[in-house]
Each structure stands twice: as C-alpha cells, then as structure tokens.
Amino acid sequence: MAPSPSAHVQEARDRVAVRLRNLRADAGLTGQQLAERTGWQGSKVSRLQSGRTQPSDDDIRAWCRACGAEDKAADLIAASRQAQQMYTEWRRVQRAGLRAVQEARKPLYDRTKVMRVYSSSVIPGMLQTRAYATALLSEIARFNRTPDDSPAAVEARMERSQVIHRAGRRFPILIEESVLRRQIGGPDVMAEQLGYLLQVAQLHSVTLGVIPTATGAMWPLETYTIFDAEQVTVELLTAAITINTPSEVAQYAAAHEEMSAAAEHGHGAMRLITKTVSTLA
Image 1 (cartoon, rainbow, N blue to C red):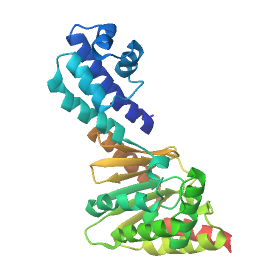
Image 2 (cartoon, one colour; image 1 turned 120 degrees about the vertical axis):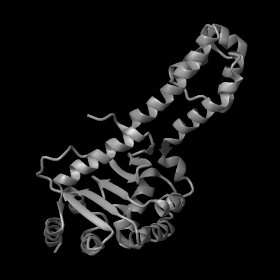
Image 3 (cartoon, rainbow, N blue to C red; image 1 turned 45 degrees about the horizontal axis):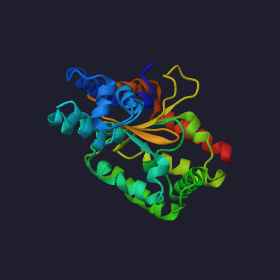
C-alpha cells in the first residue's frame, strides 16, 4: 500500500532534519555544544534535528552559522519552505472565507492541459451545479467554523469550472458510485446535479468514469487531482497535501489508470447515473 499523503509531508520535513543533523556532525559539534553557540535549550536542538519541530528561517540561519556553514542556509531554507508548502491547513486558508480558496487555484487550473481527478466523496468541483456547490460549500464553512461566503465562493467556482469548455484540454475524471447516492442539498438538488452530470459527460474534453461499488478495483483513495505530470493535490478532512516529487506523481497516475480500467465509461456510466436519478423521484 502506498504511503499516506501526510507521510509524504513528514518525509520532506525529515529530510531537512537529517541535513541539519549532518551539518552539526560535520562541524564536530554535539547537540549541547550547538545549543550553547545558538543560545538555545538543548531540547530545541533535539526537536529540530529529529524533525519533531519545523525550523523557521532564522533557526536555519543560526544553525548554519553555528556550524560554520552559512553557505548552506539558503538551500536549507528553500527545502524547509517546500516542506511547509506541501501542507495547507483548511482552517488557516479559509479564515477569510471560501472564495479566496477557489480563486487561488485558478491560475493552476488555467495552465493545466490534462487534469485527472478522482473523488470518493462528492461530485468534483468543476462538474458541480450552482445549487450543489452552494449546499456543499455552506456545509464546509459550517463544519470548519469559517466565514460563510458561499455565494461569492460559488461564483468563483463556477467561473473556474469554465476551463472544461476550453479547447486543447482533457479531463479524465473518476468518481465512486457511492458519490452519486450521497445527497448534498436534498433530492431536488441531487436530481439537478445528476442531470447536469449526464450533460457534461458528453463534452469532448471530459472522460467520466464511475467505479461500481461491487468492483474489484483498488480500495477508495482520498480525493485527488493530478495537474499534468507536475503535481498532485490530495484533499484530506483538515488539509490539502501538495505532492510534486516525480516518482510520487507517477504513482498517482498509475493508480488513476488502474482505477479507470475498472470504471464504467460511456453508456455504462450513464446507466449508473440514470439508475440513481430514478431513486430520487
């Protein structure tokens, strides 16, 4: 089984910690000697070189200065910032509301040519109706106790979703069959949403696959989006994880291909959607 997305973040932090530890060892310093040179408690040195605490830019500069390796500081700071940027806590970025979150990703959506999406929980954002998006974003704001600016956030999401109508783009999208049955906003909202799903599935740019519940496909994964071959964004309950290591991006692409092989496409997918619509009548 592949490592969890959170494990990727910890691995990046651990790599920074190992480099700090090696710098100390190369300088011939013990942890206590480094603490004395920096004016820190010994426990802080231990936390930083074990990866339990993420170092600040100033921490790294002080560490490198104490080790006589100031020329290594810029590289280490860049690596540490990358590790920090891998993890985006929802409550932190949603403090000013959900609209900003929608708008922040628009440049990435605009430049991506092939966007592979998998969702095990809800209809993917770019395929959502206005009513479905409103119900979902309002519930997210309520749960995360952040400002509910869902009307503005929905407008931003609708604008961002226009990318599926642009020429030269491809959207291989996979959803679990259970997503069709999970009611967001009530029966009327779901009926409209599933009807719209039938429409957008006809677009040349969209390849929609529905993974039947009774299939031997891979176990359900966290919702993710693969942007070309550059990066993967994985959505967790509390945060989003950004993965850009080529081998790990390739692993998600391989998982997408395997799940796609087990999914229903075309008439098969339409049949599953239509069957779900009939249960809402």
